Amino acid sequence: MTLTEFLSKEQRRFPKSTGNFTALFTDLVVAAKIVSKAVNHAGLISILGATGETNVQGEEVQKLDEHANEAFVTTMLCGGHLAGMASEEIEGVITIPAEYPKGGYLLLFDPLDGSSNIDVNISVGTIFSILKAPAKKGAVVIDDFLQPGTEQVCAGYVLYGSSTMLVYTTGHGVHGFTLDPTIGEFMLSHEDIRIPSKGTTYSINEGNSRNWHSNTADYIAKVKEDGTKARYVGSLVADFHRNLLKGGVFLYPGDKENPNGKLRLLYEANPLAFIVEAAGGASITATNGHDAERTLDVTPTGLHQRVSLIIGSTDNVEEAASFYNK
Ligand code: P6P
Image 1 (cartoon, rainbow, N blue to C red):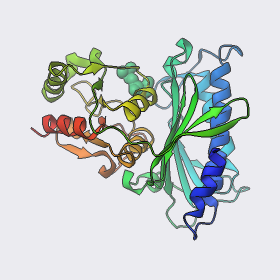
Image 2: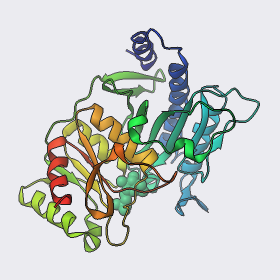
Image 3: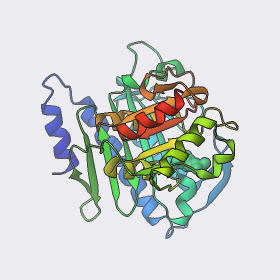
């Protein structure tokens, strides 16, 4: 079954649906295919390497970052389904120009997460989140995007790896599609993904251990004692996807140097938390290094705010939470 057929089938489950979401998602898939082609050909069309500029995060912008951001912004701008967008690469909100119709959704995305891995051919990904736009006149403002993760209507990611996969949920199951480049269609390959309740893998950057709070250090000592395997790609979508399919827990906790960790709430933590809960898993955010809180319940205060993230199989996340709530 193609993704197009799957979307039509899903839409028929909701008789009152207008087709706007399906059309929006179809535009998103076009952007994903454009980025997939660029990522898979990067080495050949010499767009590898950095542009020499830095983005709003102060990170070196890779040419592919720019290309991916452009692909999503230009593909999504004129479809008439969005009231606005927010991208990791852009400081403020991306408003819809007057010449285009506006729609009722907000799209937030990290166009190419893990881009520092591009030049060494390690998997990278796009992460996206879709919210309902507040019913109001006039251009959207940052506050319109500051909705808790429970408000998401859709979340997903594209993994540009040995194959290109798109995984998404609208809260009714998590479904994975693999791109068949010979026909340019995403084909249903993983219907109704369920994350194992307990995994035997943990993912964390041990290089940060000198800055860990004692609760993180104690939890990691425990998982090591239990013989849990360490797997860390350093590319969020790749680490998350492996744990989603095989079970396990990923941690990017806050520490003494970076109290809120590194990952972004609105377009990294929230979409992945929405996906993992829809697949039967769990996601917490240990604010100020302890007091574990459900990621989706965090009240956002900024478009690019960082949060600590502990996400994956329910049993593993619950065990981690017990260390953070001590
Ligand atoms: P570190 C990549 O830059 C990224 O944003 C995520 O994809 C990844 O999980 C994390 O940062 C890796 O960070 O500090 O371990 O290199």
